[in-house]
Length: 281
Image (cartoon, rainbow, N blue to C red; front, side, top):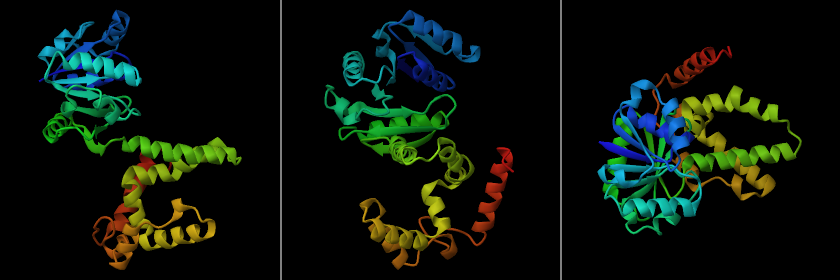
């Protein structure tokens, strides 16, 4: 398989390195300087699979085109519209914020377009998000998902917007409010580095909720909702339904996920190993 990466900046060259582990890559940029910087950064063992060019014409020979240009809607649309005239390849944009629907509706054939959101640095971080628009063809999704998994990536398929960015927006919004309230930045980061970050790394927010207990979370949310009247605290319907079925988490053997009899002991051991690895214990 041959893949073109359009844009040789920090993300583009990282994407090229990730793909060059398994496939031929054409790295394109309008700037010779950017291409030279990328050539110097890419390890020698990968360079043999990377071709450098300032022309988009070589997209004709590619199976997938990964666009990673400046995060500007008009720029991305202009580049992608030029590319889709040259090739029948699947078109992907490494946008993190711009709506894929806003891009797709400006293309001639939006069915073969989707967002592919790589994390920074792309050749190191395991997660890649496929962000599909309302136009994206299901076969194109399966093709790109299989391609990314073949690179050893953990793939999440999102609709319309990045899940990573939704989490980031929520967390950073709360952190910003805390700073405005006089909470120190070091205290905020310490909470994540020494508690929430550890639990979310091992179990995710929902997996961690199972250990807390869905019933505990429900009544805590209900109290906060009644106390402050803020809709963000209102317990969701799915949580109430779980409790009514007795699926309250690890202590019941089933919550959002299912658990064996030694789930709690296994959790403790995982945390202990992680703390030792990080030098926190």
